Length: 291
Image (tube, one colour):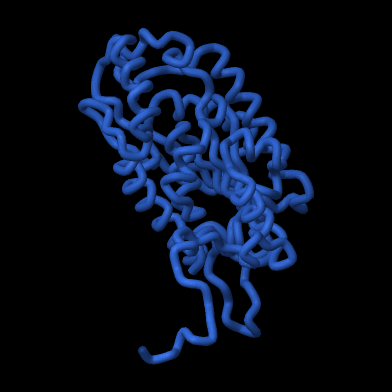
């Protein structure tokens, strides 16, 4: 199965998308007290950091916007399933967002521990946090290990496990047993976790990941399903927004190809971008010559 594409139906070579969720939406939590004051990291465990009043208002507004997005043109037959990181700031974000969704529209909610934030160890003083941030930028966020905490690579491993579980659940029609129902999966998580999720889902390289930018508090990213069975960021987000998030021109073109099909291809004439293709010899009539 190609990255970012769900299982296809072999009948007549067409894609069966009737049981696939319409959208997968990644939401970063609202502004938390540590976003407003870095000293909080020295007195409050990371997983217990709470939203500020501004963060609460952001989360409420985000719930309203997302509900409007998924309910428009849905023939009044739409549902949502929520995943949420176990941190207090993500759980509170979900609670505030949830005010926009009637219970009859909610298929379920699952606290997903694999989508938690990168572990920064235990308490930290502001000076050490600033040093860690500076070192991560020069060393590389994927490989850098926070003292007493995780590497980005470690986060990738656990989020990869979640993505594969999610794909299996989708293929088993856990979310869409009724073909006429429009289902949306909403994942309330953190800045790094959302980038790692996209890296895994679209099979982006480490170099591509390093160029990605963290989304703002309560900002969200919409992966929407196309007729070809591909999920894409290009349906809901324009080039300017994708560039703001750190996607290169080739990555943006690839998203458009996933959204709109073979008519939109990248420079190599394919919807999939594979690294290292430039290291192989050029095709020639002599390639089968025995030396």
